Image (tube, rainbow, N blue to C red; front, side, top):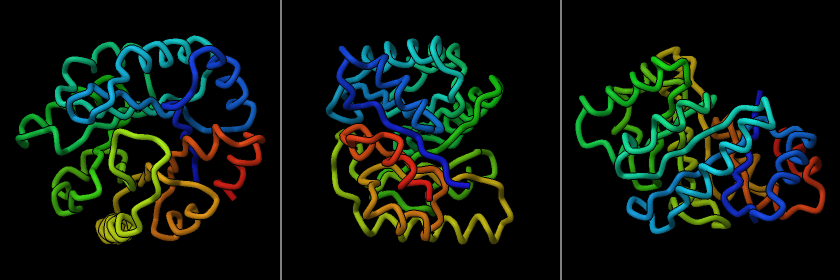
Length: 219
């Protein structure tokens, strides 16, 4: 089953609550929360995303799909754990040692939250294979992280296919999420490559019909 995680990175604050309600009615499966620190990526969304995530935790039962694009996840993780998200993703590029990576994974899992490892377009599947048995999902960035509205980098789908093959060979039960440039034109390629969780922001939020846009991604 394909699930849609709608990114609210570009959502304007003044009508955010109405949009959140409309997205739930339109059958998004999750809300994708892009937490950026201005260091790992240029943009800083710390305050805005915490505000949005807190609001969502009070008005919806849909899952929060928290994606940390930060250098030091330890600075932020406790306050998001308190919001009981469905997923917390962190970038392998920010974790310099195996010990630290496993500490982060275990901290998230000990709080009954699903954990995901995220990789940038230039990071190989080989770099994360040893951690895959311990996580619930791998998030493959299909654009350079940090900005909304980018075009999908086609080569990243080769990594999705490689990851899917590895997961099937090892008989792991793991979701594959793709993030960046997902729209009506690229979604079929992403699904055929093996993705079953689709992050979509601009395509959904800029649509005149949220329900139709989300349906187009799922069908």
